[in-house]
Image (cartoon, rainbow, N blue to C red):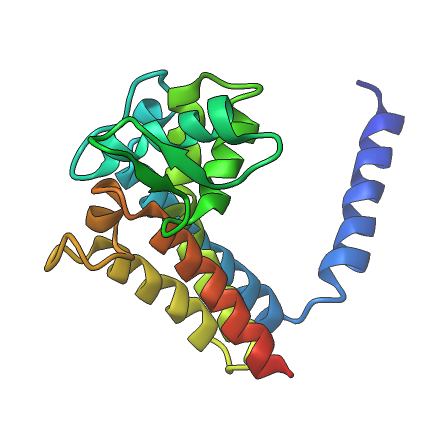
Length: 202
């Protein structure tokens, strides 16, 4: 490195501070990093709790009703698609309706991911989608509803607290219920926060 390189680097650094940092007030800069910290930390904890190493392994998810739900998207893939999204199966006693009362959209996305990924991995990625997106969706709701700082950021943390609630395991929404098979509920909850935000935004 010669002297001209040092001068060039110093000039580039000065330009960055003058243009990028100079346009941001200290308050705006602080708000930005607090936002990144709170929303990012809430999302990181949600991801950490679901154990990504297990999500990205080609294993079969079980627990509660989850083991039974593994069957559904495979039946959709093998017997209903491409022309049907619901139907009838003889896999249980005298038969049962398939995706007439259960939500077919998450199963459809599992089938799409299964084109590129092992089935178990594709299933788990969709199953945890609502969990990992709820904190940021809560923050987006706060922003769209025009709540003052730092309320939207606190919404992200409240979303995390809700996910970690262990007072119930069957009513849906929290991690315990999602791991028991109610992953469509948790996905819908994230979309509901976005819908409320757009509704409040007008």
